[in-house]
Image 1 (cartoon, rainbow, N blue to C red):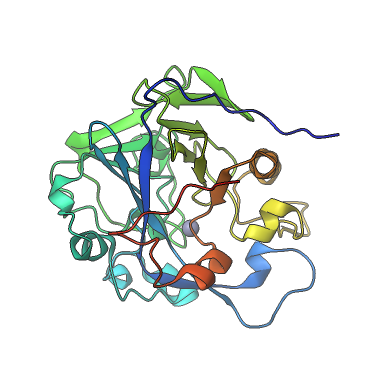
Image 2: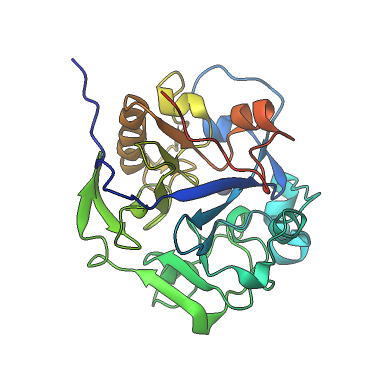
Length: 300
Ligand SMILES: [Zn+2]
């Protein structure tokens, strides 16, 4: 029995998004943080992908995630020691080499505030920054906020240009997701509540054609594509006191979200792409899916 969810049909003259991948640095992640069971000894060397989305009608420019800051060692020394970040091209440089000035970007959407997704916000001089409401904790804007230096950096966002997606913004369901926001009100791009990795982690679900193709940009909803298919399982450790340690703050919630992503794989013409997808990157590095090119809409 198929559990494939359905996504809304295109309207007449449907607006959609052109989506381009952006190089944004690499990192090394120990496999035992990522997958349970047998795994290679060598760490998983993976990209921290970012994306440019352009609205087909208004030409609004959105960047999803900002990858890794070139000087991340200064901002997150603990993370640098553990994850060996390597930045040959920043998001700003990837945009510029593709003919897009970072200062012309309208919106920066951050899946969450871990150091490998915040990059360097400073070249985005006019963009509004869109965040899940849970990011207030990581920004220290909420009482009782505590920051784990292995995952968060001291990089600052422009506080006068932050917009938090609230529970009332997430006022509709789409496909397998119970909470989403039709961002432009025209069915071209949805902000998705994709919880589990951290408080109020968000994804983007974007239409990529006028005739029914989509892409889900999953951020850190999962860290390897085999976790989405179910071939691999999320790693965790149970300490002597019974506490569960996992790369996701809320393991079971993250797994429920992974099941939702898995159900999207059943829907024709939906591509699912996560920030650290080493398999996709291995197949597509240097190809015409990076700006100035666009990731082609799936045909089937
Ligand atoms: Zn990450």
